[in-house]
Structure formats: C-alpha cells, structure tokens
Image (cartoon, rainbow, N blue to C red):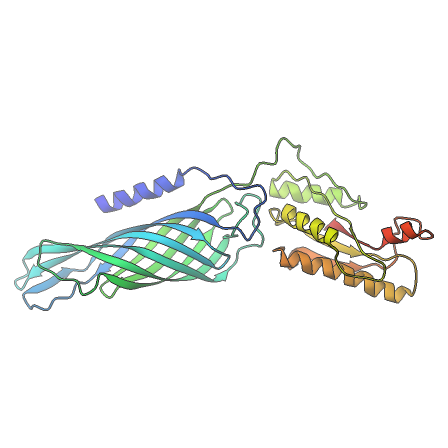
Length: 346
C-alpha cells in the first residue's frame, strides 16, 4: 500500500510541474525535456540453488519514474529509477522466512517506429518534437539491479540489459498516457500504466489582437485565414512573402532563401494552416513555356519548405504563367516584378 501511495504522489507532482518557456525561434527539429511516472504489476523471481527455499509469492506492485529528452521525432532517451516490489520466500514447510526486494536504475533509449504526430507541432505545443496522437515504441537500455533482503544472497551481475515495448497517446498540451511491458532482468519484469508530461508552452507573441495581418496581394484569403486561426486559438501575425526570380530561371537566390527560412519558422507552430504556392512569369515568350517555368518555380519553393519541416500535406503548388500581372510588362522593372511566387492560405 505504501508503494502505491508513493507512486500516486509522483504522478501528482508531475501534473503540477511548472512549465519551461521555449525560445522564440525554436522549430520542429528542436528537443524537449519530459518527466514520466508509472505504476503497475511486477513479477520478480529470484533463483535459488538450495532446495531449502521456495518462492511463495512472485507478484507485487511496482512503480517507475524517469527524466527523458526527445532527441528527434523518432528517438528519445531516459534516465530511470524503478522499484519492482519484492518476492516472498518460505522454507520447505511453507513458513515465511523473508523477502527479496528489487530496485533498478539506469539509462534507456526509446525508438518510435509508429508515430501519428502531426508535423509540425500544434500551437498549444512546445514547438519541438511533435509527440501527439498514438505512437508505438520499443525500449532498450542498460540498468543496475539492487536487492534488499535479510537472507544470504549473491547477485550474478549487477548490470543487465533492459528491453521493453509500449504504446503512448499524447495530447497537444504535453500530457500523455503510456502502457508498457519492461523486462529489467531475467528475474524481474513490470507491466505498467504511466503518465508523461512534456514541458514548455507556445512563446508569447506580445499584445496583439486576434486575426491575421496579411502582406500579400491576395486579399480573398483573409476571411479563410481568420477562420483557420480561430480554430487554433492562436494570435498570428503572418507575413506572406513574395519570392522573386531572375528571368527564365527557377533558382532560389540568397534573398529568397532568407525569406523562406523566416516563413518556415513563422508557420511551423500553426499546423492547421495550409498554403497554395502560386508561380508566375512575365508575359513574354511562349505561354506554354511560361506555364512550365511558373510551375517549376512553385515546386522549388514547395520542396524547400518541406526540407525545413513543413508537411507536404499543408502545401500545394500551381503554375499560372503570365496571368495576374502586378506591373507594367512593357518595362524591364515591371517584367522582373512578375517573375515571382506568391502564397495564399487555403
């Protein structure tokens, strides 16, 4: 009973843990800390080379807690401590003569081989590893086993390999539930249910008013964008870049790369927003070639954003040729202004 009560205290401490503020420009490739605590059913079975001992009760309650760090979308590391309960020992006549307690600590790695998390993180979520939704993972690590008993005993080896398998469901606020089976050694295992809390919150955006400030020539996208931002409960001040190209070229220059880097950082925390990438050319030459070039420009921008962690499901591209000119195509400056890519919110 005391073991179960102490486990409950650990869970309550996690739920009341303070949040750690995130840096303003962190993205979906950054890491984050978390705490976990679990309790469940343990099975411990010490071996005996003497017929004078019988293991009368191999089952007990156990608990474990850990400090973890998300290295990537698919890998995390943890340092853990586990109390696996005790086995009751009796003599050949069935009379209880003592018990053997099991405690273990060490380090493990978690490999998430199935992950439903959105990419990138949601606006409620610390802009880091998007641990949301349902996941499956495997665990492997190295631990040190310690026993406590009044009976004479000898451990074959203090250090051992740890293996486990589990499932996790995480919510956007950083809380998650885990169910896991872990084998700590040949004679100790724990089937448990636990709580996980990842720390952090969305960086403050200052005293802005709800809505979207658009710096784009596409005005019809504003109402839809406002509707999307209300779903995310976020304050969004989003600059929609216009990417310019050299005539007859689809290559991104340094200025375009800097614009897209800023844009990727800005939109990484608003995972419900989708974008249409529209490529244009000046009205010169063959229109079929212009359509191909404008589509190639839009695709170059889309592929660049994907390399920065923006999900391809959020992006679509169009090649519109010389439609919708923004300047006078009779002048050199006007023609250059039309070699561009623009964004709208879908």
